[in-house]
Length: 632
Image (cartoon, rainbow, N blue to C red):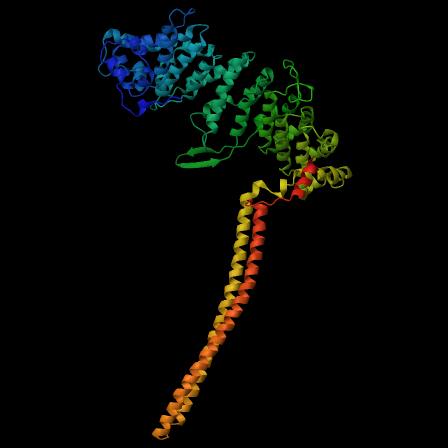
C-alpha cells in the first residue's frame, strides 16, 4: 500500500517547470513522470491554456485517441499517449471542451482558427471505418461523453444535419461504447444551459431507428442487448423521478410502449433484456402523473394495463419451452437437468410484476393460461432451484391475498393447490428442495383459515386433515421451535416488554412498602397529639381550682405541680421510648419480610432475563439434547 505524501506537503510542480517554455511540445509533457494527476488536478487550467495557444497539439491529442495501427512500432505513440490523452480529454476540463466549439476571447490567427474548426470533424471521422479497435472505441467514447455532458446541445448542432454521422453511430451500435453514446444523445444528459432548440424531433427519430434496427436484426445478440440497455435506461430514468413523469423523457417512453414487439424479440432471442424493458413499462403505469392546466395542478392515477393483456396469455406456456441450444448438466444428485436460464427467470419476474398490479383482468388472463399448473410443474421439475420456489410462493400468495372468490376458485379447483401440496409433501421427497415451498404454502393456508373463500376448499378434505395433523404437525414441531427455546430475532422486543413488567413490579413494591410505613407513622403521630391535648386540659382545670387558696398553699401547690410536671414528663418520655421500641421491632419484622419478598422478586426477574435476554443463559442440558436428537 502506497501513501501519497504530495497531498499534504507542497512540492514543486513538474507542469510549471515544463510550461516555463511557451513552445513546450505535447510529447515532452506526456513523457514526464506522474504528470497525469497534476494535469487533471491543480494544473488543469494551465495545461488547457497551453493547448489552446497551440491548436495543433490539440489535433495531435485527438489523433492519438482515434488512430490505430496494426503493428506495434512505437510503444509510446500507440499505448502510452492514447491512454493519457483520453484521460485528459475525458476529465471534463471545461476550457478544453469549450475550445472545440468556441474560439477563445483573444482570437486566433487564420491557420489556428482553421485547425480549431476541424477538431470536431476530425473526432467524429473515427466512426467512418467499418471495423475499429475496441480500445480506441473506449478512448473515443470517453472523450465524446465528456463533450455531451458539458456541451450536449452544441454536439447536436454539429451532428443534427449530418446524416452520415448518425448512420455511422447506428452502424456500430453493436459496440457497447457506441451504444452508450447513443443513449446519452437521446436522453441528452447535459449540464449546458438550456437552449431554445432541444432537438426533440431528431432524438425521437434516432430512438425510432434503433428500435427498428432491433426488430430486423434480432439475430445479432450484441445489437439486441445494447439497444435494450438503452431502452431500459430511458424507462428507469423515468421511474426514478419521484412522483411525476419527467417531461423530457415521456415522449421517448411513448415510443417504447410496444410490449408485443419486445416480447416477440425476447422469445426469438431468448434474452432477458427485452423482458426487463417490459417490467419497467409495467411498473411505470401506477406512477402518479402531473397535469398542469393554467395555474391548477391536477393529480390523477392512470392504471390501464390493457396493453399487456395479449402477452399475458403467452407467458405461462413459454416457461415450459425447451432450449435446444442449452446443454444439460449434472446436479448434486447426479441427475441430468436442463438449465432453467436467466430468460425464464425474467419471465417469472414479469409474471410476478403483473400479479402485483392487482389488475383482475390481467390476473384472470394469466390463470386462464394455466399459470398455477405451470408453476407446479416447474417447481417439481427444478426441485433444487430456490429462485423458482421463492417467486412461485410470492405469486400464489399475492393471488390469494386479493380475496377474490372467482380467482380463489380458479387456484384451488383448476390449479388443484391442495392436491399438489398433499401429493408431493411426503417422506420420500424430504430431500427435495421444494419441500420448503410446500410447507410454507400449507402453513399460509392454515393462517388464512379465517377467510371462508379459502376455508371451504379444504375444511371437508379428509386427506388434507390427515396431512396437517400428522405430516405438517411433525414438520412444524421440528422447524418452528427455537434452539434452546430462545428466539434470537425478538431480543429487543422481549427486552422492552420485560423492562416494562419489571418497572411495574418495582412500582407496586414501592407503593406497598413505603405506603404502609408512612401510614403507621401518621397514626402514631395522631395518637401522640391527642394525648398531649388531654393532658393540657387537665392541667388547666387544676390551676383554675386553686386560685382562692392562700399564697402558701398556692406555693405548695405550685411546688407539687412542678414535681407533677417532672413526673409526667418522665412518664411521657418512658411512653415515647416504649412506642419507639415497638416501632423499631415492627420495622425489623417488616424489613425481614420485605427482604425475603425482594429476594424472591429478584430471583423471578433474574430467571426472566436469563431466559429471554441472554444476560446469563442457563442451559438445560437434557432439554437441549432432546431437541438435537429430535432433529437428528
